[in-house]
Image 1 (cartoon, rainbow, N blue to C red):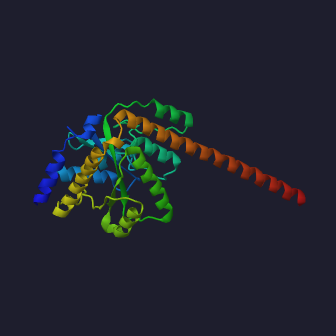
Image 2 (image 1 turned 180 degrees about the vertical axis):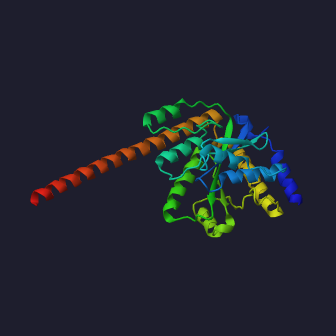
Image 3 (image 1 turned 90 degrees about the vertical axis):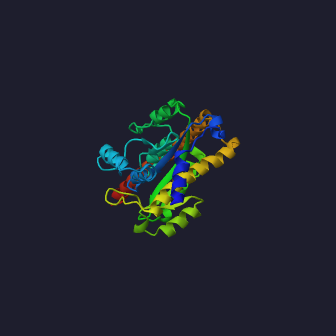
Length: 297
């Protein structure tokens, strides 16, 4: 039990003061919880808060998600204060994971969408470009991505490539290798899934079973898992602080994130234009063939 006390104290007493990151101008850590809708993002946030802060179990994050999305996934970047230094962010999840949704998620991960407001994403390319470039650097936040994935879903070869691309971009956007959380560990083959994520280059992978309103009886192992996740996150921040020469000021990192999201959006728009042209050509070609066939008849 002493390990639990030490882990909890480490997180609760953590400070950026006098660190290299604080000297660069950072004063808060945003744990950017992201992933597909329904994989357990909000439940994970509830579990972290319950493990660290104790008291009565509260289903705040899950309730917020259901209210805002009418039973689907949250439509806001909801923030939850964990300590004076650490804030959990429940980013809007994605469903079909098309290019529009991916761009939306990247704007959230890059802190280019405001906290605690509806996530607005425009279908017009010009409007999206204008919205991204208009964002000002109004925070001094370190962004640490936490990717949630349900062990119940498994990972196909097709989804593996999409996840690989997403995790790679998340690292480029934030400067941190994502922490992987495998939820519903007892409902799937989490060991195989864990190895698949290691094959993608991920280093910190945690299979968990979230606390819920129906099952929130604490156990030492559960507590240790959730507290260890927070401890590992702080270790990552400390490591980057020791190599801060590769990390810019909040303003410099903000500019990099804006440029990266713009580049992704522009590339996707080019791909969409090419697809439209191909579809148009295929349709015209099909009509010509029909005309020729009718004349022959």
